[in-house]
Image (tube, rainbow, N blue to C red; front, side, top):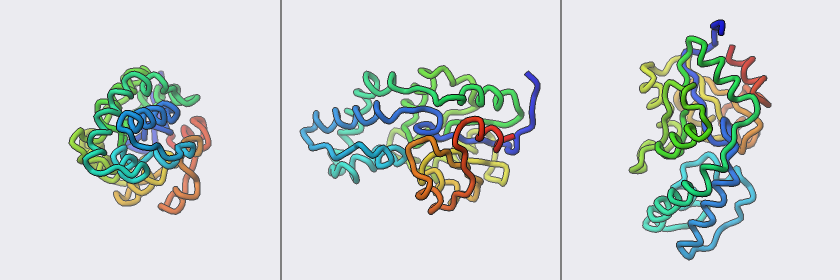
Length: 220
């Protein structure tokens, strides 16, 4: 494959809602977790409410769990995710072809997710896309490095780089846009995921792609 020149040296991808269509599986695991804890489930029909923020924030904020129950929920959720959530993931159309082209370029590419590290690794393995990335980075198991503004510089550092104007974050939610803004890096919002255009704009987003083909044009 002929190498083409990307506009960026470091290209970071959110996972859920950007690379993988995953919300139905995540919703089921949240509901099963709350059922096991004997807690009522909120209305989860609006995926934008729980795809994007750290899972701990979803359990404590959206679901109203105490700090203690939130920690229990995180453990229970991971067990359910292995059974029900992981296999519900599927790649968005055109994403694998885009990753192949990026892999053949001189750019360093990485997953940059608020999903915990091990589940992020597992999703990429399940989707058979691990080989396309120079790094897969998620939040730490102990709850640290969970906000996107923390995961972005961590990911760039893992790639061997520094925060510069040659870094771009690609994501579908206001959390991705906010993380990029706070780090002073470019952001490309995708309109096919679970966030909303207006909430990304409110966090400073100004460049958007409706599909993988449009995303490719913005990256090369």
